[in-house]
Image (cartoon, rainbow, N blue to C red):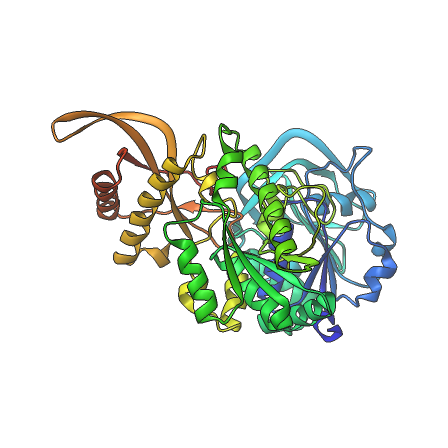
Length: 516
């Protein structure tokens, strides 16, 4: 495994929502990356033989007393360092420059002007669109440093020391909205840091199989599966590592898509040879969710009941020390969990922020550093069929977070039928694989309608479809009007209790992809 980490890039995480995006962009260039807490010592960093260090963004201000920082000895080593947003502020602050809050931050798109098209900005356009997200800004640059780019309102956008071994950007090159972000990162990785392209999805699988085998050893592991991409890949990965020690469990909480439990068991057992067992726990979930409308409480109830069910099942089937889950990094980010423990909570995910404090299992989460498309790449490498790994993402709490308000069996059945129609039409029209994620949402609003010359007062369904690269940002999909018309007509005519359909045109940000 040492060979996988040779020549790596280390990322110190100061709590940015985009930290894993940095790691992802690095890995996309076939360079191994690792995220570490900001307080990581110089000795630990040197032991990993990195080619470069990146300081992430974060929600803090460098001039506050509790601002997270790093081991200053890092600045004395002969390894290139790139600071992004808060990372820029740290480099300026530690080199006797000055950062302050002027009340004139920048959020969203901004246009920068390149002062010097060399080093970090080599081959970039003289004017380039970037993604900003900051309130503080540099007002005095460090001695012997130079500004290499500035924004249209004359805020420092990028700067570097004389030999370009210490470089920083106010904008986020890791975010896809920064048009030439990959050019900039390529300059840093290959021209400044001299990294090599020597890490792939196959390497990730090799590393994880070795790690899983060593961790689980003579013990056994329960693996939670749902039929979604993430849990399918996790089950295959763990099965490949430890074989018969893997006991896959599908907890049917009653909140899956239509016929999903049956289809999942068949695909994994017959198609992939995984030892999977189905447990219908829906009555327990519906009982605990009765009367609950708050989305955070719903997520935590679902997470807690999952663990309780696993606890009981494990006691019935044997001694299981570990619980495997398909947690991804966006789940961790939005739940406010970071290497530096300084991220803000957006929403708790049932397999992260929704887990109870005390469990009888040790969690195994092999995919926790990956994004959805990276998981799909791993799935392809594991020879999982496309019909399984190219499915749209599905949340762990299932339809419980796509039903606004109280979750009941009747409302779930209504949404299952509407969602099934939506997916069927998308596949028939060829739109399904043009979309990153699509689903229906049941809204707790009734509207007046006319059906068969009679007044109706029935439920409202919202359709959602987005395009995305990684789930961190997303744009609403420009669905053809004729497709929307077909979906709407079929839902209204075939789903009892629904008389109106609307289409959600909100991007992320400001919204999230899921409604809850």
